[in-house]
Length: 294
Image (cartoon, rainbow, N blue to C red):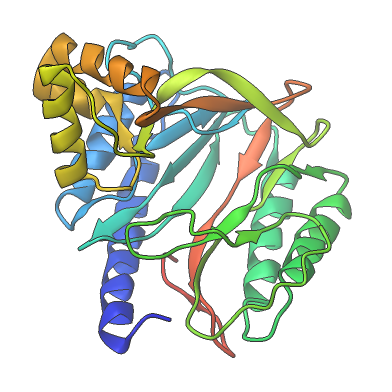
């Protein structure tokens, strides 16, 4: 479990995330380029630390894992816009997300998802079974006539590891693993008017280092060394590699993916292509749970 000094750093990262969130919400306007929005949010994050992962901006039926590409200015904010980001200080990451409904047509689903998050956070206490949190998310969302997304979940967070093994479900999956005091977890309900299952879409600009292996290409070795130094095992954006190394860097990144050293994540799309709403906070497990990113 984290020490007091480590928790102090996490609290600092959480407070920074809260400030960045206020700023990020001012950027979500109909017709705004999502790559420009991501660039601005990431620039703001660097005032406090580093991004825990690339800013993800998912529109409508896209649920998650879409980091804007370096060469794509065509995707614009419209209807339902989900923004997912975090601040990492000295390798201690946070994870938070919000949704802006530019269409104004989804107020009920917005309220249901926010309430699910609030009710789930109340259960982030020592000795709690994680399936109980999932049951509460499911009950809260379905009572309002919507579906939680069952194959997306929250997660435990550790230093340099955003997804640290323990999953926090959005339905009662029967997992009786017990939460322990001072665990750091992200709780993130997703709701939809659709089926409640996501599938892989096209590749996005999200990458992470998954296994260090020898690679012959000199340029690829240079990119790998940069990734290890700058991001360690935390996710990073192809856009960041392009900004530093240009097309040569992107070619090397593709080579690292081919060798199974780096993974390129696909966007996740609701299977019936219905709109998705998400809210998320990083929480410290206590008898009175502490929301770090509120």
